[in-house]
Amino acid sequence: MINGQLQGARWIASPNFNQRPEQTEIQLLVIHNISLPPSQFGGGYIEQFFQNQLDGSAHPYFKTIEGMQVSTHLLILRSGEVLQFVNFHDRAWHAGRSSYLAQKECNDYSIGIELEGSDDTDFEAVQYTVLAQVVATLQQAYPKVMNHIAGHSDIASGRKTDPGPHFQWAHFRSLLNQIKTA
Image (cartoon, rainbow, N blue to C red; front, side, top):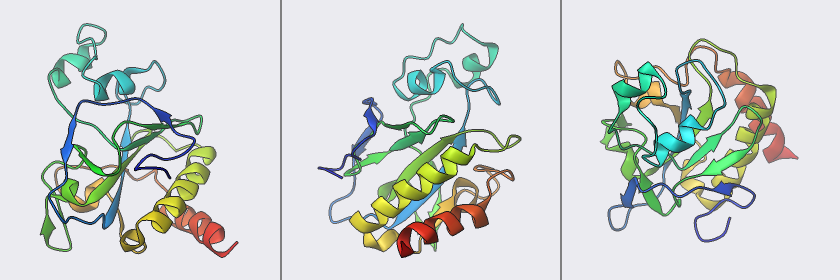
């Protein structure tokens, strides 16, 4: 980790970010899933979406999200490659209206991690491995997130469903514990 950037991640700058409120500490990691079009993988559409460059005419679904300005700090592709769109020091626009432990506006104090996936598809083994490695690194850099990892569905209940029923929380936590005790 150097100046808010994850070493080894491919940097693709998103314009969709702003400063965190003054004196705000990173206290939460939020796990998401995303696929564009829904339940389809590859094609670079996610990267285009986070850069406001998605062609609305490329797929009928894209018309429904045209003009949305969202981002994340990290995206872990199905290949295991990690892309970073927003510096950790800045606020990415990944959580929307949200609350964690009665503290509202999770974007202010969280890091968003998207997994290329969907609610109806299993994630790749390499995604779990890389996610555990990334989370272990983030926990060293931001100790307050040690016990604060949530799904988007946990912080935006009733509004969001990701990372979805195919995300294996127990498997992810087991991999994370293996890394931390190694």
